[in-house]
Image (cartoon, rainbow, N blue to C red; front, side, top):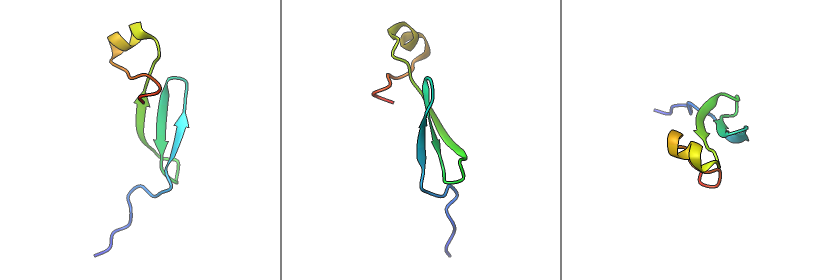
Length: 53
């Protein structure tokens, strides 16, 4: 039984102001990763730095 992929490749990463969005070939958002380089905001929001994200 061969099933088609639910999220067709290629995937792409779109960088926004304080996040990365992972999209499939149909530009459907698969994941969001939020970041901030402000140490105070990171301690409150538990976000990663941009480099880690």
